[in-house]
Each structure stands twice: as C-alpha cells, then as structure tokens.
Length: 205
Length: 187
Image 1 (cartoon, chains in turn orange, blue):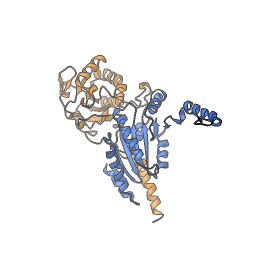
Image 2 (cartoon, helix red, strand yellow):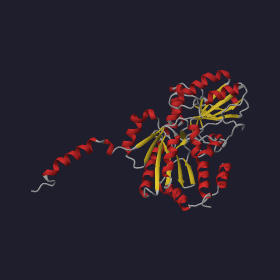
Image 3 (cartoon, helix red, strand yellow):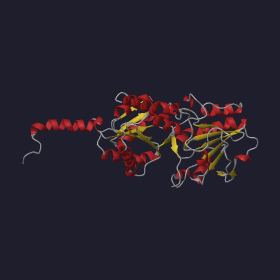
Image 4 (tube, chains in turn orange, purple):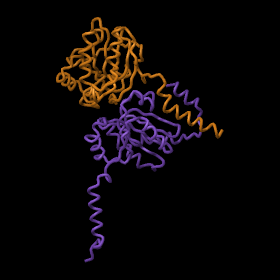
C-alpha cells in the first residue's frame, strides 16, 4: 500500500496536467462539429432583421460573436473586416453577432453598435442577440468566438480567428482562414476546434 | 525639551527615510513573468501543500479587475501555509511597463501575481480544465487531488470561500486513478 499510494499520486498528477490536453476537445455546451445550425432572425445595425436564409446560394457563413467593448474583440475587429472582404466574394459571409446584455455593458447597446458599425464601416451584418437566445444555442462563451458553417449550415470550425491576438502579422496559425479555405475546397478543416482568451459574454442576470 | 530622536541616531534615521522614499522595490508589487506554461506548472507544484486558488485575469478585463478585491480579502482570511492565491494575468508582455506594472502599483496586491506570456493558449488552456475555452475570468481551486474550476466572476468573498471550504472539507488520502479516468471520460 505504501508503495502504491505514491504511484497513484503521480498518476493523478499526470492526469491533472497532461491527460486532459489529450482528450478530444469539445465545446462546453451548444453546437459541436457536424451539427446543423438552426437559423435565427436578429436585428441588424441598419434596422432590418437578418436570417441566414436571406443569403442566396451561400458557400458558408463565418458567424462571429463579437462586441464593442471587449479589448480582444477590438484587437480582432480589422481582421474580421478583412476576412469578410476576402471571403464574401467567394461565398462565405461574415455574420457578426453581439451577444452581450447592455444592462451589464452599456457600450454594447444597439445604439452603440450602430455607431461603431458606422465609424468602422462594417461591410458585414452586425446583429444584436437582444434576447440572448442565439449565443447559448451556439455555445458561445466569449468575444470574439467564431463558428464556421458550410453551405448546409453544418458547423465546421469553432474557436479563434488566429493564434496571435496582439500582432496580426505575427500569427503562425490562421485558423479561421484555413478552415474557410478547407470548406471552399469541400474538405474538413483541421483543427476544427481551438481555444482562445477572450471576454466572457455578459448575460442578463 | 528632550529631542524625540537622540542626535546620534538622526543620520541613521535620515538614511532610512531616504531609502524608504527612493527604493520602489520595497513598496512595489512583486510579480513574475513566465514565458512558458511549464514555469507556471512548476510554480504550482512547489506550492501544492497549501490549498491553491489560481485566478486567471487581465487588466483589460473589467469583471476580473472588479473581482480582485475578493481574492485579496480571501488571502487575508487564511494563513499563508494554508491557502495560497496566484493571480495569473494574461496581459500582453509588450504592455508590461506601460500598463501592467502601473496597474499593480495602483492596486498594491498582496497575493502572488504571475504574468503568463505563453502564446500557445490553445495548448495550455485545457491543462487547467478541458471545459474551459479561454473566457475570462476563470478560477481553479486545488486542494491536493481535489479541484473545482469556476468560469465567470465571484460576486462575494463568501461565495469564493464556500468553494474553497467545500474542497478543504473533503481531504481524502487516497483516490484511485479510475476516478480520475472516469472524470476525464465524463467531460
């Protein structure tokens, strides 16, 4: 017994720090890779309501949960614009969704979204998940948090845009771009799930 | 009238006063920068005789900053050998001097502060909890083999203390690795 205990201790330590990283990655809740995303109808900054079904013959959608206030979302803002400008002509639109409750973060109100979209000339739809029902369905937990859907709205990639929040040119892995290229080629993206630092989505109490 | 400080001690007092005013190290917040997750792992290893509260935060994260006094208050409630708090900041290393150090100075935190600059977040995030996807704040409480991972902020020190005490209450001497394996499989 005296000999076994330390062995177990070492094993447990090993479990705690290393085995976890080897287990298959999955989102805490919401969609997993391969699920078909349910369409939604949310208000855009131009006042109109937008659904995925409004887009004709899409090759896919890059659904980006983002917001005004989060410094990490701000760091990625230009990259989200660039991704849309690069991939919309190829059939993959960016659909940005602000999931935060303005009751918690006033900077993320619909009016502030309109101001920011205008100032930064967002070329994509910037929708407000006012009732906070869409982001839990996806399983989004932070901003920014991206979900790549293919033409059948099947979830093909979940996670980060790239691996360098601070310096765009310093990114070694451009996860979202690689995933979109794969989907356009009719292939399965790899990796299809990544984790990244971000701001927690602010839920209404 | 007799002077409060005798004449012969006055030069010493003066030196002490000058030192106190000119050496910021004595008042500045101590922190360490870890470029690799392995450095943080060894740090945690060294401290693991105590109950560990590892909080992931950043100066840019508003709820994280609001929550810091809760960890400080908890720190004051326990003996250092009994409970250790490690505040792991995910601020950018490039903003160390401009943002991070001034922030620490303004807060004068008593808990240990670590700036974790390991960029390979996709690899190290799941080492703390495989359900955690990187949203801040997040807190891991470790007590021997027991662990509780909490995402989101604590609203009060009582809430945090409850989590700590629930772990301290269960101090099994022995847990089979089967439990560990099934826990992993169940997640």
